[in-house]
Amino acid sequence: MSGSLYLVATPIGNLEDITLRAVRVLREADLVAAEDTRKSAQLLNHLGVKKPLLSYYQHNQKKRDAQILPLLQAGKNVALISDAGTPAISDPGGELVTQAIQAGITVIAVPGPSALLAALVTSGLDAGRFCFEGFLPRTKSARRKALAALAEEPRTMIFYEAPHRILQALEDMREFFGERRLSVGRELTKRFEETLRGTAEELITHFRAHEPRGEFVIVAAGAPQKAFFAPDDGVLSDELRELLQNGLARREAARLLGEKYGLPGKKIYALGLPKEE
Image (spheres, rainbow, N blue to C red):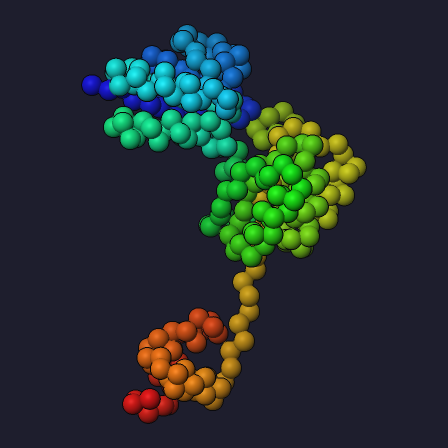
Protein backbone atom coordinates (compact mmCIF):
# COMPACT_ATOMS: atom_id res chain seq x y z
CA MET A 1 0.00 0.00 0.00
CA SER A 2 1.47 3.38 -1.01
CA GLY A 3 2.23 6.17 1.42
CA SER A 4 1.03 9.76 1.25
CA LEU A 5 2.63 13.01 0.13
CA TYR A 6 1.90 15.81 2.60
CA LEU A 7 2.25 19.45 1.54
CA VAL A 8 2.94 21.13 4.86
CA ALA A 9 2.66 24.90 5.26
CA THR A 10 5.33 26.36 7.54
CA PRO A 11 5.65 29.82 9.13
CA ILE A 12 6.50 32.75 6.87
CA GLY A 13 8.19 34.47 9.80
CA ASN A 14 6.58 34.04 13.18
CA LEU A 15 7.23 30.50 14.42
CA GLU A 16 4.05 30.61 16.51
CA ASP A 17 2.07 30.31 13.28
CA ILE A 18 2.86 26.60 12.88
CA THR A 19 -0.30 24.51 13.29
CA LEU A 20 -0.72 21.60 15.66
CA ARG A 21 -1.54 19.38 12.70
CA ALA A 22 1.61 20.43 10.86
CA VAL A 23 3.74 19.50 13.88
CA ARG A 24 2.06 16.09 14.12
CA VAL A 25 2.49 15.35 10.41
CA LEU A 26 6.17 16.31 10.52
CA ARG A 27 6.68 14.04 13.52
CA GLU A 28 4.91 11.11 11.87
CA ALA A 29 6.46 11.44 8.40
CA ASP A 30 9.19 9.02 7.36
CA LEU A 31 11.03 11.75 5.45
CA VAL A 32 10.92 15.53 5.17
CA ALA A 33 11.80 17.02 1.78
CA ALA A 34 12.87 20.63 2.33
CA GLU A 35 13.81 23.50 0.04
CA ASP A 36 16.65 24.54 2.37
CA THR A 37 17.70 21.78 4.77
CA ARG A 38 19.70 24.15 6.98
CA LYS A 39 16.77 26.51 7.49
CA SER A 40 14.31 23.62 7.87
CA ALA A 41 16.59 21.92 10.41
CA GLN A 42 16.31 25.03 12.58
CA LEU A 43 12.51 24.86 12.39
CA LEU A 44 12.39 21.14 13.17
CA ASN A 45 14.81 21.57 16.09
CA HIS A 46 12.58 24.36 17.43
CA LEU A 47 9.60 21.99 17.21
CA GLY A 48 11.51 19.07 18.72
CA VAL A 49 11.11 17.02 15.54
CA LYS A 50 13.91 14.68 14.52
CA LYS A 51 13.44 13.34 10.99
CA PRO A 52 15.67 12.62 7.98
CA LEU A 53 15.90 15.69 5.75
CA LEU A 54 16.26 15.59 1.97
CA SER A 55 17.09 18.75 0.04
CA TYR A 56 14.47 19.61 -2.55
CA TYR A 57 15.02 22.82 -4.50
CA GLN A 58 14.68 24.23 -8.01
CA HIS A 59 17.83 22.75 -9.51
CA ASN A 60 17.59 19.20 -8.13
CA GLN A 61 13.84 18.58 -8.07
CA LYS A 62 13.81 16.23 -11.08
CA LYS A 63 16.47 14.07 -9.44
CA ARG A 64 14.61 14.16 -6.13
CA ASP A 65 11.28 13.30 -7.78
CA ALA A 66 12.89 10.10 -9.04
CA GLN A 67 13.97 9.31 -5.47
CA ILE A 68 10.81 10.31 -3.62
CA LEU A 69 8.19 8.61 -5.84
CA PRO A 70 9.54 5.07 -5.22
CA LEU A 71 9.55 5.77 -1.47
CA LEU A 72 5.91 6.83 -1.63
CA GLN A 73 5.03 3.77 -3.70
CA ALA A 74 6.79 1.61 -1.11
CA GLY A 75 4.50 2.93 1.63
CA LYS A 76 6.60 5.75 3.06
CA ASN A 77 4.98 9.04 4.07
CA VAL A 78 6.82 12.13 2.84
CA ALA A 79 6.27 15.71 4.06
CA LEU A 80 7.23 18.45 1.59
CA ILE A 81 8.03 21.89 3.02
CA SER A 82 9.42 25.09 1.52
CA ASP A 83 11.46 27.84 3.13
CA ALA A 84 8.22 29.52 4.19
CA GLY A 85 4.50 29.25 3.58
CA THR A 86 2.72 26.66 1.47
CA PRO A 87 4.95 24.54 -0.80
CA ALA A 88 4.42 24.40 -4.58
CA ILE A 89 3.30 28.06 -4.74
CA SER A 90 6.20 29.97 -6.33
CA ASP A 91 8.34 27.18 -4.86
CA PRO A 92 9.40 23.71 -6.07
CA GLY A 93 6.95 20.85 -5.71
CA GLY A 94 4.31 21.23 -8.41
CA GLU A 95 5.78 18.55 -10.67
CA LEU A 96 6.15 16.12 -7.76
CA VAL A 97 2.47 16.60 -6.94
CA THR A 98 1.49 15.94 -10.56
CA GLN A 99 3.59 12.77 -10.76
CA ALA A 100 2.31 11.52 -7.42
CA ILE A 101 -1.31 11.96 -8.54
CA GLN A 102 -0.59 10.19 -11.83
CA ALA A 103 0.95 7.32 -9.85
CA GLY A 104 -2.18 7.00 -7.71
CA ILE A 105 -0.50 8.32 -4.57
CA THR A 106 -2.58 10.29 -2.07
CA VAL A 107 -1.62 13.97 -1.87
CA ILE A 108 -2.75 15.80 1.26
CA ALA A 109 -2.51 19.53 2.02
CA VAL A 110 -1.74 20.63 5.57
CA PRO A 111 -2.79 24.29 5.30
CA GLY A 112 -1.34 27.12 7.29
CA PRO A 113 0.61 30.38 6.81
CA SER A 114 0.39 32.06 3.40
CA ALA A 115 2.04 35.36 2.52
CA LEU A 116 -0.32 36.07 -0.37
CA LEU A 117 -3.46 35.63 1.76
CA ALA A 118 -2.02 37.62 4.67
CA ALA A 119 -1.25 40.50 2.32
CA LEU A 120 -4.65 40.30 0.63
CA VAL A 121 -6.81 40.41 3.75
CA THR A 122 -4.84 43.32 5.24
CA SER A 123 -4.78 45.35 2.00
CA GLY A 124 -8.24 46.88 2.33
CA LEU A 125 -8.89 45.93 -1.30
CA ASP A 126 -11.58 43.59 -2.66
CA ALA A 127 -10.81 40.06 -1.48
CA GLY A 128 -13.93 38.53 -3.03
CA ARG A 129 -12.26 37.87 -6.39
CA PHE A 130 -8.50 37.89 -6.85
CA CYS A 131 -5.71 36.36 -8.91
CA PHE A 132 -2.19 35.44 -7.86
CA GLU A 133 0.53 36.33 -10.38
CA GLY A 134 3.58 35.22 -8.39
CA PHE A 135 6.89 36.91 -9.16
CA LEU A 136 6.93 39.34 -12.08
CA PRO A 137 9.51 38.63 -14.82
CA ARG A 138 12.98 39.90 -13.97
CA THR A 139 13.74 41.70 -17.23
CA LYS A 140 12.20 45.11 -17.86
CA SER A 141 10.65 44.25 -21.22
CA ALA A 142 9.08 41.00 -19.97
CA ARG A 143 7.80 42.69 -16.82
CA ARG A 144 6.19 45.51 -18.75
CA LYS A 145 4.62 43.04 -21.15
CA ALA A 146 3.15 41.06 -18.25
CA LEU A 147 1.70 44.19 -16.61
CA ALA A 148 0.32 45.49 -19.90
CA ALA A 149 -1.57 42.21 -20.30
CA LEU A 150 -3.06 42.74 -16.82
CA ALA A 151 -4.08 46.37 -17.32
CA GLU A 152 -7.76 45.44 -17.83
CA GLU A 153 -7.86 42.63 -15.25
CA PRO A 154 -10.91 43.37 -13.05
CA ARG A 155 -9.89 41.18 -10.11
CA THR A 156 -7.56 42.21 -7.31
CA MET A 157 -4.02 41.11 -8.24
CA ILE A 158 -1.28 39.78 -5.95
CA PHE A 159 2.43 39.76 -6.78
CA TYR A 160 5.59 38.68 -4.98
CA GLU A 161 8.61 40.92 -5.42
CA ALA A 162 12.24 41.13 -4.30
CA PRO A 163 13.54 44.26 -2.54
CA HIS A 164 15.95 45.20 -5.34
CA ARG A 165 13.13 45.15 -7.92
CA ILE A 166 10.25 46.68 -5.94
CA LEU A 167 10.81 50.21 -7.26
CA GLN A 168 10.95 49.11 -10.90
CA ALA A 169 7.78 47.08 -10.43
CA LEU A 170 5.94 50.03 -8.88
CA GLU A 171 7.13 52.38 -11.62
CA ASP A 172 5.74 50.06 -14.29
CA MET A 173 2.51 49.62 -12.33
CA ARG A 174 2.17 53.39 -12.22
CA GLU A 175 2.21 53.40 -16.02
CA PHE A 176 -0.12 50.47 -16.65
CA PHE A 177 -2.41 50.64 -13.58
CA GLY A 178 -2.60 54.42 -13.23
CA GLU A 179 -3.89 55.81 -9.92
CA ARG A 180 -5.39 52.60 -8.61
CA ARG A 181 -4.94 51.71 -4.96
CA LEU A 182 -2.06 49.45 -4.03
CA SER A 183 -0.98 47.77 -0.83
CA VAL A 184 2.56 46.59 -0.15
CA GLY A 185 3.17 44.09 2.64
CA ARG A 186 6.76 43.85 3.86
CA GLU A 187 8.24 41.17 6.13
CA LEU A 188 4.79 39.81 6.96
CA THR A 189 4.46 38.25 10.47
CA LYS A 190 8.09 39.15 11.24
CA ARG A 191 9.56 41.66 13.68
CA PHE A 192 9.65 44.58 11.23
CA GLU A 193 6.36 43.81 9.50
CA GLU A 194 4.58 46.73 7.87
CA THR A 195 1.84 47.35 5.35
CA LEU A 196 1.93 50.47 3.17
CA ARG A 197 -1.11 51.58 1.19
CA GLY A 198 -1.55 54.21 -1.49
CA THR A 199 -1.09 54.87 -5.18
CA ALA A 200 1.96 53.68 -7.07
CA GLU A 201 3.27 57.27 -7.04
CA GLU A 202 2.95 57.53 -3.26
CA LEU A 203 4.65 54.17 -2.71
CA ILE A 204 7.47 55.06 -5.11
CA THR A 205 8.08 58.25 -3.14
CA HIS A 206 8.24 56.22 0.09
CA PHE A 207 10.71 53.64 -1.18
CA ARG A 208 12.94 56.26 -2.74
CA ALA A 209 13.27 57.76 0.72
CA HIS A 210 13.46 54.42 2.58
CA GLU A 211 15.66 51.63 1.24
CA PRO A 212 13.50 48.57 0.46
CA ARG A 213 14.44 45.61 2.65
CA GLY A 214 12.88 42.21 3.19
CA GLU A 215 10.32 40.22 1.27
CA PHE A 216 7.45 42.05 -0.42
CA VAL A 217 3.90 41.22 -1.48
CA ILE A 218 2.13 43.76 -3.71
CA VAL A 219 -1.66 43.81 -3.85
CA ALA A 220 -3.16 45.89 -6.68
CA ALA A 221 -6.79 46.87 -7.19
CA GLY A 222 -8.37 45.50 -10.34
CA ALA A 223 -9.40 47.62 -13.30
CA PRO A 224 -12.64 49.56 -12.71
CA GLN A 225 -15.65 48.37 -14.66
CA LYS A 226 -16.23 50.37 -17.78
CA ALA A 227 -19.38 52.44 -17.89
CA PHE A 228 -21.70 51.37 -20.72
CA PHE A 229 -23.48 53.87 -22.93
CA ALA A 230 -27.10 52.78 -23.01
CA PRO A 231 -28.91 54.18 -26.08
CA ASP A 232 -32.66 54.79 -26.12
CA ASP A 233 -35.11 52.19 -27.39
CA GLY A 234 -35.27 53.80 -30.83
CA VAL A 235 -31.53 53.35 -31.42
CA LEU A 236 -31.67 49.82 -30.04
CA SER A 237 -34.58 48.98 -32.35
CA ASP A 238 -32.63 50.24 -35.36
CA GLU A 239 -29.57 48.20 -34.45
CA LEU A 240 -31.67 45.13 -33.75
CA ARG A 241 -33.45 45.47 -37.09
CA GLU A 242 -30.10 45.76 -38.89
CA LEU A 243 -28.79 42.58 -37.28
CA LEU A 244 -31.98 40.73 -38.18
CA GLN A 245 -31.73 41.90 -41.78
CA ASN A 246 -28.18 40.51 -41.84
CA GLY A 247 -29.52 37.06 -41.04
CA LEU A 248 -29.11 36.77 -37.27
CA ALA A 249 -31.82 35.10 -35.22
CA ARG A 250 -33.68 37.52 -32.96
CA ARG A 251 -32.48 35.82 -29.78
CA GLU A 252 -28.83 35.92 -30.88
CA ALA A 253 -29.10 39.55 -32.02
CA ALA A 254 -30.60 40.53 -28.66
CA ARG A 255 -27.80 38.73 -26.82
CA LEU A 256 -25.09 40.51 -28.82
CA LEU A 257 -26.62 43.93 -28.22
CA GLY A 258 -27.06 43.13 -24.54
CA GLU A 259 -23.32 42.36 -24.23
CA LYS A 260 -22.46 45.49 -26.20
CA TYR A 261 -24.43 47.86 -23.96
CA GLY A 262 -24.54 45.97 -20.67
CA LEU A 263 -28.32 45.49 -20.88
CA PRO A 264 -30.50 42.42 -20.32
CA GLY A 265 -30.99 40.53 -23.58
CA LYS A 266 -34.67 40.00 -22.70
CA LYS A 267 -35.25 43.76 -22.67
CA ILE A 268 -33.86 44.10 -26.19
CA TYR A 269 -35.66 40.99 -27.44
CA ALA A 270 -38.97 42.46 -26.28
CA LEU A 271 -38.61 45.74 -28.20
CA GLY A 272 -41.63 46.67 -30.32
CA LEU A 273 -40.72 44.93 -33.56
CA PRO A 274 -42.94 42.60 -35.57
CA LYS A 275 -42.35 39.00 -34.53
CA GLU A 276 -41.56 37.88 -38.07
CA GLU A 277 -38.55 40.18 -38.06
